[in-house]
Amino acid sequence: MSRFRLAILTDEVSQDLGEAIAFAKRFGMQALELRSVGDKLLHQMEEDEIESIRSLVERGGLAVCGLSAPIFKCELDRDEEVESHIAMAQRYIAIAQRLNAPFVRGFSFWARTPFEEALPRIVSQIKRIAPYFEHAGITFVLEFDPSVYASNARKVARIVDEVGSQAVRALYDPGNDMWDPDGEVPYPDGYDYLQGRLRHIHLKDAVKTATGVEAVAIGSGQIDYRGLFRRLLDTGYDGYLVLETHYRLHAALTEEQLKRPMGQSFSDGGKEASEQCVRSLLALLRELGAWA
Image (cartoon, helix red, strand yellow):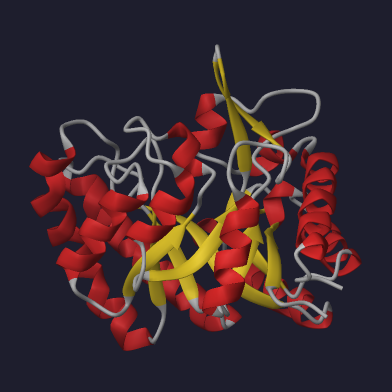
């Protein structure tokens, strides 16, 4: 019996949604998170394409647990870009409603100046989209990423608190902390910063080497996933754990692919790496008595 609900980001397996659905079902996952399908991001699709996705997922007996949107991966000081991303947020809300997805993921703008200097403007822009999410009953989950202003969980917590909306919460990805320029410890420090704010979790693993950070299969890196999963069991976490492989067996993803993941070039080799990751993840959960 599973103590957690598992999902996978589909383009970490394939751009073919049917193939990703088969993968998820093979490993007993309950849901999918969508980012790019058929070489398109969701907001680039027509209504009939979204309906096709809805129908395919429904026939597969799975749920859509979230939409991994690139909202606010743009320049904070370019008004035209910001406005286009506010429109993008509204489009993702409509898609989330069509797919019955509770979460839409977003970011905090490309990092160009010190975080404290940019914080008031970041908060102001996220406050502009918060009412749309509040009205729709969908949660905007803010993810930390080394390329944006909120590069770690501590900074995400600051933004969430200052926005002050129950529709704006935190996405915890301990793997991203491995690339944090401030050196935040993924667990327990990153997790602790998000207490009372956490709504969604992505899973990836990595190791720090003499030449940089290298992605690896979950459980074989330097993140204390045993500690995290025990903590989640103790606290009764009832959200999803979403596998975001983010590495490949025979080639490294480029920095640009990691910043803007989408499309066939990103998915190439992902199925094999994702299989290794999910087998490692399930073995770890079985060890902890959290997966039958």
